[in-house]
Length: 145
Image (cartoon, rainbow, N blue to C red; front, top):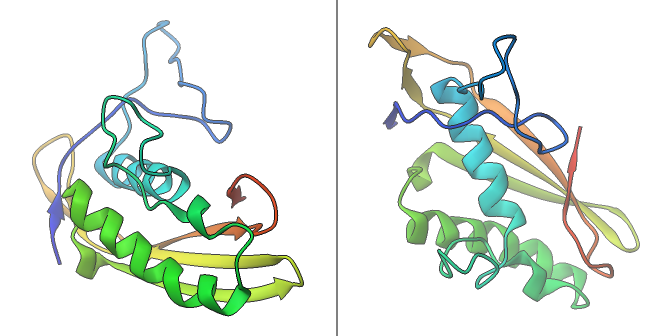
């Protein structure tokens, strides 16, 4: 299991930047920052970010295809995206995919790891699970909140 220490600007549930009481941008904790990065990677297609064209899991390539193929390919594509990005250890991420409707899958992406807090102390953090709906007949992946 890797130890994560990077901290990034915090984003709210709607994806907007979070502003603190002083009017400054809020900085996310290491667990929140790592989770935000994983969410972005899963929801991004290759070439979508002009500054990092190799960033993303590229799940949009599966839209319109066979359900069984998507179920088999999604975990592989997420691991490939993690390998390309190099920020999150592939062994710290576990992906499960289940059909929930004729045109929809649900993804459970579990993130494990240890973290360094703002005081430089290692903290144990329970594994967190991020849930996504994958509408493979529509256009965008949506996080399930």
